[in-house]
Length: 98
Image (tube, helix red, strand yellow):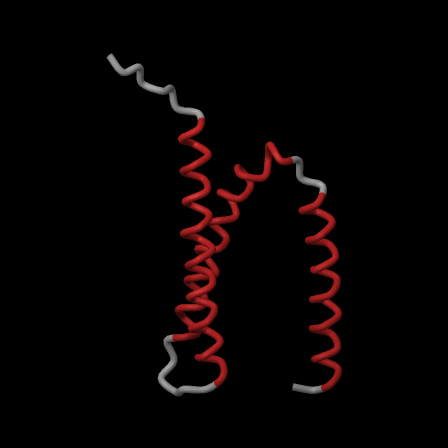
């Protein structure tokens, strides 16, 4: 990896971090959970990509990072679905006990 490539990648990362921070802080709390459930689909795609990367035969840093990505993205997906399920439970009508 050349120095120019590294600088370009860091530049894009920093810009994406600032843009993401600005977008997330502008989301009202009432929209946060529905948007989070939509983000679970994106995390699911990240899991698939990480599985492809982690599935290589040779053990190198790419495979190790792929395995870490699989674990973290899976935690993100499961946590997101749990939060979404909890949100949906709040809107169900409560049964009256006789």
